Length: 311
Length: 176
Image 1 (cartoon, each protein chain N blue to C red):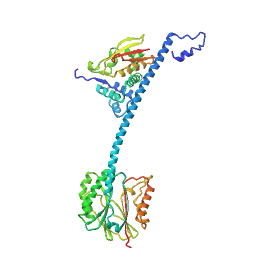
Image 2: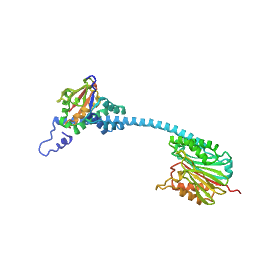
Image 3: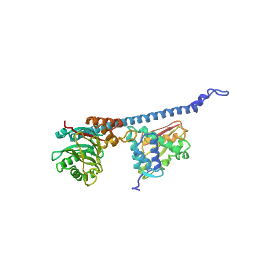
Image 4: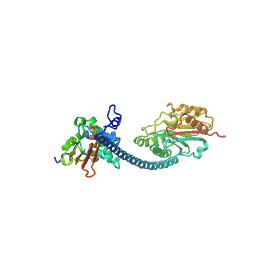
């Protein structure tokens, strides 16, 4: 007997009044009681479920606090690492300042990174510059950078030529770099009166001599790949000439259409602006790069040098 | 016999697991592992069951109502998708099915001391009262749910309630 059935009997089709039996009422009573019991069980079930949810939220809160704490420790460590790495980057020495106009854009993708440049004073009183891009990013690359800096600082006091210096560093580092599965592109340039001598292992270099662009020959190996000899090249570098050294963080960056910024585009922009101040050339290059690609995708180093004109 | 291990029928574990998943009361890799590892026709150490039960109990401050619902859900599936319809026609048949631990012994085997029993000891169909005595290693709240779910499944009863407040091992059933 359902409630509906009882109500329908209120209007019987034929004669006779509706006369529910005690059995009908009893059935209805248990049906109601059954529904009430079902409701009680549902309430108890959902109450436990809600408590479980609340427990889960508490656990999540605890985990979030722990994550925040761990993140804080890592962030603090990275800030320290960033300060250490920045302090490893060089400033121009007096002689270089006298002879060169200088502009640099150096930005790591993370707090620390694998792009590295350095100025060296040679043992016979000259000076040199090195630009390196260690594979990967972050802390591992930064540690390799510190290692290479130490190696170059040692080598510069032992040898005169870029070739000997790079070969020494490579021979000393190849075992270590292969162990840690890292390598580094390099450009190492020694300034030698009206010339530069360079070794290029996968780095990018452009020299604008008398408004004529000359690309660095970059067929030599990266540092850390194998034990081998390197080639050294000489180019003229007279007053007013530009020397541009950069890593692939700019040229391999892609826009929304997956197009590379490209070496050709950067070199063309530099050549077109070659008669401007080095800081203006740098601003033009970075401005163009940012318009092309809004998000940095790799460590970036771009160094522009000009040999000062003697007035 | 002394070294005999208590084993639980895979279909029972899968039933418990299915009920938990249907009710969304457990989740995660551990439960998914159970689902792939347990075959319905296999027999598994009681420890697997205990492990599964612990997974549910750990998630709740008070799991009593949850386990009642799990038991009910298990028997709903047993009746609608398992052998239930061929074994019982009415709600009270489910109680008779427990006579002599018949139903229980189809899903667990091992030393009597460990296995225990789940037995109908008293029944008054006219008044709608019955008593089941349980000494199984399973959770009593889940067993309350099993009785409620098993008796409600055929659809002829309007009211079923099971309590064990006086003695945890004595399940008092009222049905109409």
